Length: 150
Figure 1 (cartoon, rainbow, N blue to C red):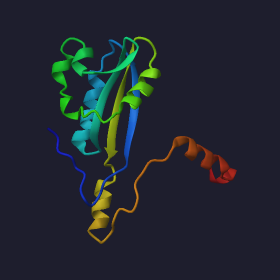
Figure 2: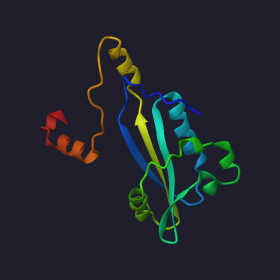
Figure 3: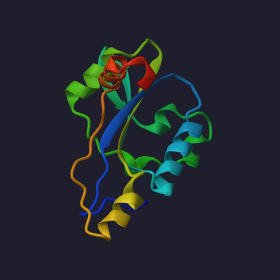
Figure 4: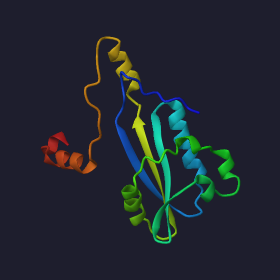
């Protein structure tokens, strides 16, 4: 089991990403890349959910349910399944799924600035805020800048 790297001193922004993949797609490479990010300490994986639709209703799926031959045994993801998503989250995601597709929801803490925070912390610094920026808000702000600043 991988050890969380969040401390009382620093926690990065918590965010999520939802990917849609066709049923039968090879998932192993993406999951390995995700686990490598966790092992490097770049992210702390808080939850990993695979969402599908059965009889018109959203369902949580296990990686073993979707894995191609041999895939399920090569990547262990059970420790990351914590059911953070609520029923309304699952319904919203499932409502966007094309037929014969599943969604992979990744809820994670960004740890990329942990070493920076630790360095400043050694000199009395403290994390004041952490959070995400909506990409549409960022695009709107950039669009308002004079042309030479873009």
